[in-house]
Length: 416
Picture 1 (spheres, rainbow, N blue to C red):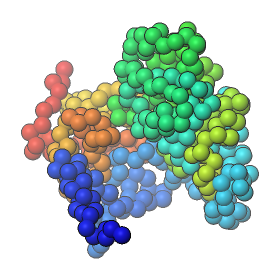
Picture 2: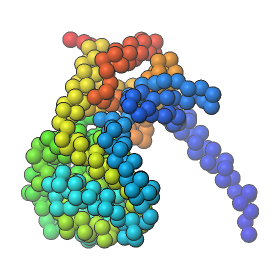
Picture 3: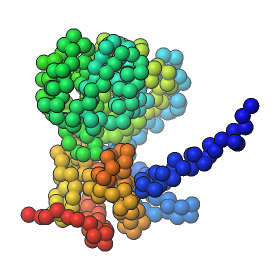
């Protein structure tokens, strides 16, 4: 028997972490407690003895629905009615009435026959894309080069699970996508996987033109709308709803963890697609379902946002207000068409230092975004203004960023 003490396991773990530290991208988890009714403020615990009040600028709870009184009440009522956990997988006692109602609501939201709720957006992507080669032998998946890690993982799983090829096309590049589709065998099953809103670069896919290419070359379409559901469209159905394209996309994937303020992911599609994924995807079959209280809260949140276009309007106004301030001060941000405002730094050490300065000196929390979330050399701070970020909060943020930018000697854009 080999004594495990003869193998330097712990030293290897330490070396792995040291390499991340040496690159300046070691991640520190900020210990915070959100304040119900006071979004976007929170209490920060920098150490075991200290508490400080901060303003959070990097939350994916884009509309503050995790603090919404109607949603909180729905969660409480479900706990009082059904208890906490679901009690099993969806196949073994874990399908509660809350899950069924939520799936009906999501299917209706996206104009589809059915929906399938999973434990997270990551799992929804990985499980659904990962099972496609079992359903469609010989499948070729055309993947945007900027797709989320969960989509990449799902495609890799599909490659392992069956006969499947992956062909990566340049980001939002229709010419490159068409060239790759044209080069593929005409009789091969094809699927184009892409996102609507790309969360790190704040841009939007040319959905209609991708659907046109899918029609031309006989491909299915799979879109990740996690940063758009609840946020865009008359009822919060995402960019596809906003552009009247839901009927043209075969599989719409979304999350309950961002605009809806809960946790969980889902797909919406034709009932035959839903049934096949439900029956064959191991990531769905073999995991305990989300708690009934979570499903109830998500259901309430979806319903509230369907009837709240004013919240989406307020959110866009706030995002534009922050962009206008950054623009006026010549700060090098990506001036995109979405609610996400990435402030570019381009160095992992400086990015972390700026984030540390913001929270320690100014009580402003903006997490540094480094590799592998973004490519090396494109490190950034990603700001996500909500309808509840006031002008005073924005002015305080600009004062802090301008101070740090000057101290660090960082470049600015020329202001016209």
